[in-house]
Length: 140
Image 1 (tube, rainbow, N blue to C red):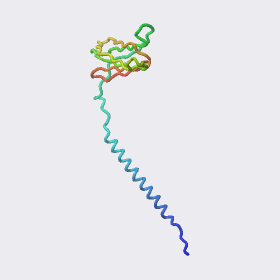
Image 2 (spheres, rainbow, N blue to C red):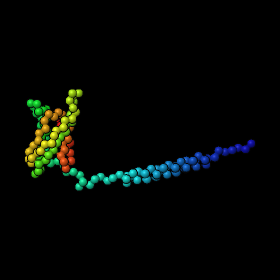
Image 3 (tube, one colour):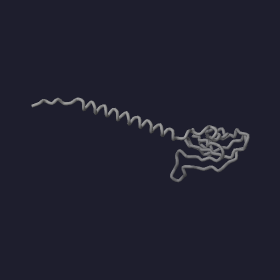
C-alpha cells in the first residue's frame, strides 16, 4: 500500500485565483463608477441661476386681533416694483381646512412692505416672483 500525501498546492492555487478574481472585479467596479460620474451633468453655473428676491423678511408676533399669532413683513429693497405671490403651508391643520393657502400676486412698490397675516409657528411660506428664485421661509 502506498501512502498518499494530500497536496497543499490546490488550496494555495485556489486562494490566488480568488484574490485575482476579486482584484479584477474591483477594477471593473471602479471603472463603472468613474464612467457614471463622467455622465452626470455638472452643476449649473452661477450665471444661470435666477437672482434672489429683493425682499427682506421679518416676522412679528401679534398679541391681539385676528391677524396672528404671527405676521410676515416683506420689504421691497429694490428700485423696481416686485410682483410676488405666496403660498402658506400650514404646520397644523384641521380636517375642515386646507393644508395650503395660496395668496394672489401682489405688487410691492420700492421701499414698501407686504404683510402676510394669520401665520402660526413652524408654518412654511414660499414667496415667488417671475424672474427670481423662490424665497422659502419658516415661521419661528
